[in-house]
Image 1 (tube, one colour):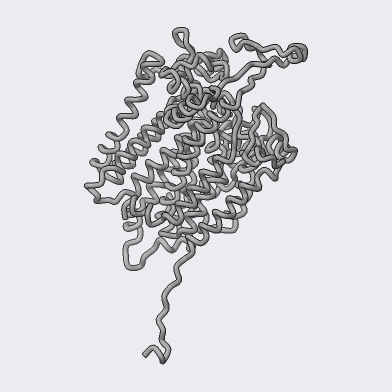
Image 2 (cartoon, rainbow, N blue to C red):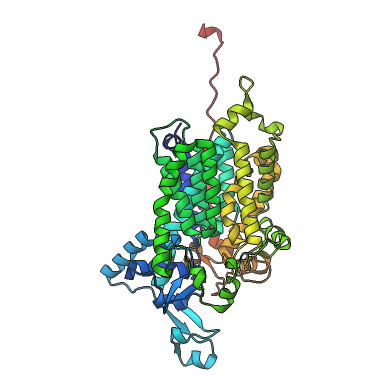
Amino acid sequence: MGIAARLWSERTVLGPLALAAFVTYGYFVSPPAWNQNSRFALTRALVERGSATIDDAHATTGDKSYRDGHFYSDKAPGTSMLAVPGYAVVHKLSQLTGGEPPGFEVLSTKPAELAAGVRVDPEDMRPGDRLVYNQAFRVGLYLCRLLTTSLVAAFGLVALYLLGLRQTAGDRRAALWVTATYGVATPALAYSSVFYGHQLCADFLLIALALIVLTRERASATWWPALAAGASLGWAVLCEYPAAIPVVMLTGFALWHRGLRFTLQLILGGLPWAGLLALYHLAAFGGPLKTGYDFVYLPEFAEGMRVRYGIHAPDLSVTHAILFGRYRGLLYLSPVLLLALWGLVMQLRRALPPALAFFKDPQKDPEKDIERAYPRRALAALALALVSYYLLLNSGYYMWDGGAALGPRHCVPMLPFLALGLAPALRAVPRTYWVLAGISALQITVATAAAPEAPRFGDPLYGFAWPRLLSGAISNYGGATNLGRLLGLPGPLSLAPLLALWAWAGLQLHAATRPEPTPTLDTSADAT
C-alpha cells in the first residue's frame, strides 16, 4: 500500500489526531523573546521590504548579525522563509483595513523616568530597559508560529503514526499511543508552540524518513515521495544548519533501503532548497557558505562562536547534565524517553520479548520478511546514530544550555527518532510505560504552559513552572500565556479547555481504533 492510500485508509484516525495536535500547539501563546523576534524580524523584512536586513527591528533581539552597516538575523533562514506566505496575507489584510503595523517601544525601568513617561530611543537602549510590544506585533508573531512550527508539527505526528503503525504490525492503538506520547509528553510540545527552528527541523527529518520507509518498494512510476523526501531534508537544513549531518545519514539510508534511483530523485528534490539557502547567504553575508554566525553582533556571543562556531570536543559532564540534570535534563523533564532509549537498543539487538511475538510468522522467515517490509534493526541503528550525534554535538557546544530554554533545545531534532523506541517499550513493559508517560505529560504540559523559555538558573519545573502556574502570575521574563488565560481562567484552570479538547480527541480516536469484531461461524442446527 502506497503512502497516499495509507493516508486515506487511516483518515478516521489521522483527521482527529492532526486537528487535536494543531489546536493543542496553538493553545499556547509564548511571548516575544530574542530567538523568536530574530526570526520574525526576517519574515517581516522579506515581506514588507523585500530585503534580508532587519535594521528597523534589530533592537528587539540580541540574536543578530552585523555586516556592512546593516543588521541581519543570525539564524538559519528557513523558519522565517516558511512564514512568509502566511505573514504576507496578514500584512496585506492589515494594510487594506488600516490596521497598525507590528511595533514596539522601549521603556525605562528607572522609577523617576518611568513616572515621567520617558521613552527611550531603541538605538540608545540601556541594560534594564524594557521592551513593550503592541498587539499587532504579538498577533503577527503568533500567526507566523502557528502557520509554520505548529502546522508542520501536526504533519510530523501523522508521519510518526504511520511509522508506528508499520512498526507495531498494524496495531493502531499502540501506534496512536506512541504518537501521543511523543506529541505531548516530550519537549516536542513546548517547541511546537514557539517560533524556533528546532521542532521544524525535527519534523522535516521525520517526514523525510517516513517517505523513505513507507514508499512502495517497486513503485518505479511513483516519483513524488522521493522528491518530497528530498525537499523535507532541504528544509531541515534551511531551518537548522546542524541538520546537514543527519541529512547525509538519511540519504545513505535511502540508498541502502530504496536504491540508487530513489536516492537520485531524493537529491534532486533537495537541490532547489540548497540553492535557495546559498542565494540567501550570498545576498545577506556575501558568500554562499557564509552564515549569520560569521558576523555575530554581541561581543559575548561572537567570542563564543569564534572557533568552529563554538563547537568543541564533547564534555561527558555536560552530556550527563543534558540527560539527567535538573537544570536542562531531558530525562528529568520526560522520563518516558528512558524507555525509548532502551527500546531502540532492544530493537538493535533483536532481543524481542515474548510480548513482541506479533512480529513472528511461522509460515515465513520472520527476520527476512520483517527487514524487507520495515527495517526495524536498521532504523534502530539510524535512530541511535542520530541521537548520539545530537547529544555529542550539544555536549561540545559552548552554550550547551541553550540560554533561556526548556530542556536541551539543541537536542530537539533527535526526539522523533528517539520516539521510535517507544513502541517496543510499550509492548514489553506497558505498566511502567503508562506511569512514566503520565508523569512526563504532566510535567511537559505544566512547563509549556508556564515556561517554554525557562530562566537561565534553577529548576525549570519546581523552581519556576509550577509556582508560576499555581499563582496564575504572568511575568515578562520567560513568561508565557495560553488561550485559557486570555479567556480569564486563572492558574491551572486555564488548562481546562485544553483538557476538554484532549477528552474529545480521545473519544474520537478510541472509536476510530476500536478493533473490528472477528466473524464467528454459526454452527447451530437452524443454520444447516
